[in-house]
Amino acid sequence: MAIPLGTRLIFGFAGLLALAGCAGASATWSKPGAGDADFQRDAQLCQVQAAGAAPPVFDARTMSTADNAQDVLRQRDSCLFAHGWQLAPHP
Image 1 (cartoon, rainbow, N blue to C red):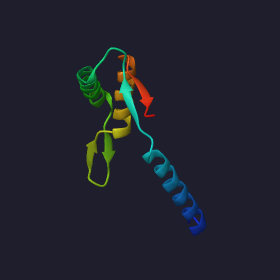
Image 2: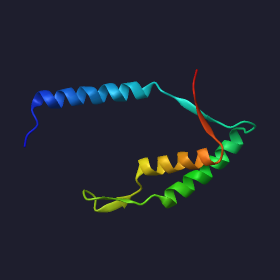
Image 3: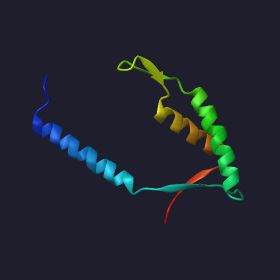
């Protein structure tokens, strides 16, 4: 079943608006009493744990597997939250 051109344009435009809205949003990780070195250490630890815990995704085009980047990012962020880090929006 073909999707009408008008519907594709509407969803395409909505997707572009969503991406544009995300482009300006930024935040930083913070933890009371912690510095940049503390964050780098915890972020590296969490990244390694997340990469090892996320199941790989099979890509039929290349006939290979790769990390699921969104799952790794989600697990890394969960680990940082568990270590006491918080995301604070930029003012």
